[in-house]
Image (cartoon, rainbow, N blue to C red; front, side, top):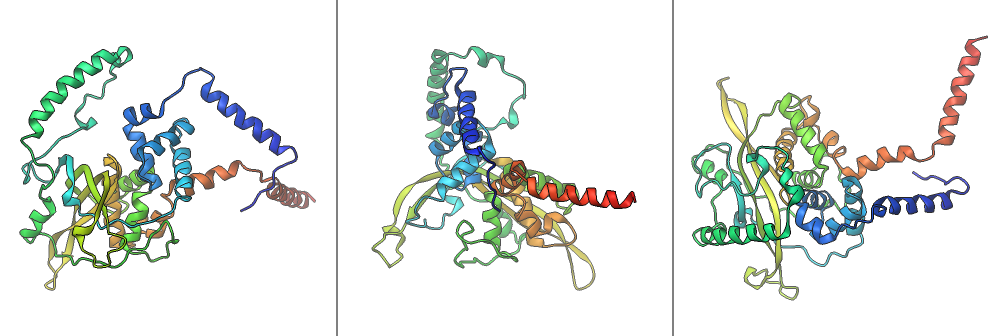
Length: 368
């Protein structure tokens, strides 16, 4: 889709950009990148997830540049990501190697390894904290010192890197059907446009980089009846996963020769969805299917909604929009959707005048 700027448009655009800079700094306050990284975890995690680029620094820079406009920040970071070379693919990451910071289950009260509440707004009173207005650096440091002393005592007694998975517990009891590992090379949706029908790997990629609000909205719609899904969160984990790459000169595929390159923080959800199975004797039996969600950072609502849509799309189209992969996958991308909506602000003079001419002609003929 191409547009030609009206005469004098370049000068007007330059003035518009100047005005935007003025609006950002006219109160003579500057927001440091490190401040955004330290105090706006939710925004940073959301931008990284929707951009498919794990860099807290670059996400914070995009947030600063866009003045907190999430759609614009994601657009900026995706555009930057497209310029970066890809030298390696990491080894497949096993989520059960996660160094867990938070782990809960809504399915069982007692789970192997225990529930770990971690950091969450779920248990707060959701009241405005006016003490934050007068928060001081000295009080902050004193609180941190006391907390860190308590934390060291607890951490020394805990091993949070080898917690068993709840889903494995159900599989041992044969309450979930056995699955076969699919080691097919996945299609990279950032390099190749999706073709319908899609594979589950493609769907999960699109979902994890989908717009958080859109994922949540469609997941909610599925629960309300547009898909008739009501899952139970089997396990929600927030923690850090180690990443490794194979030795570039080693073709033996030996894991012990891999290089550790860092870790990323993720949210992982496995949701249990009850389904009715028609048996040969025409009786119905209840079974559980597992919906899966994973995304960068601590993005719990999105990961849960993603697990709902994963299961809905696995079921396939049965008359509900949330089971239609084309409907879901083509409408949750923040850059695509916001970009197309925003393009309506661009000049449509010729097409609109053509419609006006047609309307005037029809009206004139009808008055004869």
